[in-house]
Length: 496
Figure 1 (cartoon, rainbow, N blue to C red):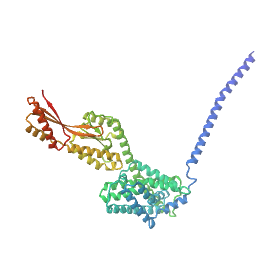
Figure 2: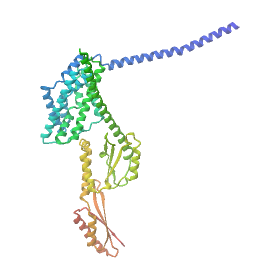
Figure 3: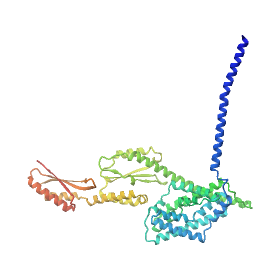
Figure 4: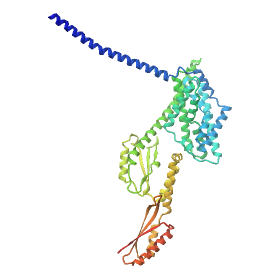
């Protein structure tokens, strides 16, 4: 009996052990399958993204060096492309500007700078810097002469678009540079990529805009356009440097160890001199990007939902966001109409601005049309149009809006009523007139809106009705003649 019990116990224990081994073996199989999946994924991504195997280092280096020289044919091609770009910018023709960018040889020395820094080649670096400098000077001089001599000097949207660099220009230059160098390094260069990068990075138009700014004496335009060209140059060179480092292009060797160390120091210093402004520019445009993002969120959440009870309105398209590293940023909100925003609401907006990290030190300016007379409103809109021309010229809807606003204010200005003089003259001419009131009213025939002047006359109680009717008619006629406005309305209050 004891023996049978012992045997049964052994069988049970064996079954339990076998049962415990099953999940352990299953877990190992799952781990093995997962590791296999990871290895397969890693192999697939390596084959997909690896660019080292299909890179021709010698051909790439030779092609970049061949594009650096600037003389003879290259110089004339540059001059012609500058003229074409200047004409295209002046005529506001995107197609012509694109054509000029495709034939421009400016990219060669920039790639040469990035490559020379990556492979420690001081001679190539010197030639690249010299040729790039000559190219820039010749480009600006050619553009300056064109705009100084050409009779039409309109500030087109294509020109002004090159005077406001931001974070998008940094990203376009960097990723465009990456694409360009990767295409150059591939066995059998991808020409379409080179053409696409030439269009996207747009080296030529900023230099034309520098020449335009100098020709019209606007150094702010020239400075901002030169900054955009600097952004493109630095970040294309930086992308070239990084890609060639990743591809492990061989360093240039020098027989003299002392010279090798000196060159290494010069190249390292130059690379640092490129990296520092690149970082400074990127940080600046990134800060501006964050400020504008928070400012737009603040306006969307606080200002736009505010509703007027009468005819006031918020001109969102004319909002001004001023960012500067040297002083606190500003948000300028513009309102028009006969109703202003209460001070309490403005105080609430200022308080809510503190909730946004990049708006804590921001100043909120509120320009209200209701606080000014019509002439001042008219002047303000005209000044605003001039100062915001950079933003507005490439946006037809905003231009149409401004034109309609100017027309409206011009009409109001034309209907300015010298009410104090009118009331004194009316009192002298109509002895039964007790008081005279005036207001502007908006009238519509359901096709268009119009502003009309409405006078209200209250006659004395003791005056006879026939006399009042006669004098009221004369008063109405006199007001039309006196103010040279046939649309004037007159309402009467006759006391019983």
